[in-house]
Length: 310
Image (tube, rainbow, N blue to C red; front, side):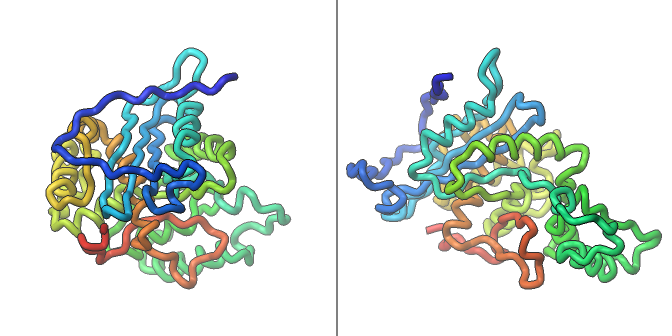
């Protein structure tokens, strides 16, 4: 099958701004020459390969400018072309300058499902991640009655950690829960075709929204409800407006409108933005006692400042 390019629609800028010029030296990747660094965010909106949203952010270090360069808000499958192939085409078109590809869903199965040892049951298992889960269970849930035991074949340490170790409770779907399992399978299928040298990260868009929104002094109620049927669009609008007003990210008017109307497009943008923050060393490191082989979700540091975006 021949590769098919994904058409890019024309956009109208929300305000006049001259784009920095990229390097004319085509023999040297732009991310090495520091002319432009790109971050691709992917929000998978369906487990049956039916739709997705993709955002491409460009960062120009010399100019200290961040742009939402492309927003593909309604990628969907056609008669003989899957949306997953379209995602791969978009990645291939930009892979020479991509620093990170950020997914909003895990692509690795929980460790218990890939373990090759004869299973003694997780009540008697000495694997590092199981011991961490038991320690967490005993420490955090000992006051709750009845005690609800964890299920290491559906959930990961990171989902347990997010539920109690941050400034707010962030409840994540289990990686192999009923809502996430089809998406995990899809993300795994997409990722296995990518160049192994391409750096992929997992992101929680809601937590990126929370931390960056707090940096911009937004109300907590707005940051908790970006997906709500009533008020979610206003929450997204306020966040994007603040980014624009503080000159943190340049967003075309058409793309801003689409992200206000479509929460998945908004989350694809947040994924790409998190990739930029990781590039700037502005995401949280995994805790010292966190199992080394377990997945980690990238999210902004708690006390980032506006000046850190430069």
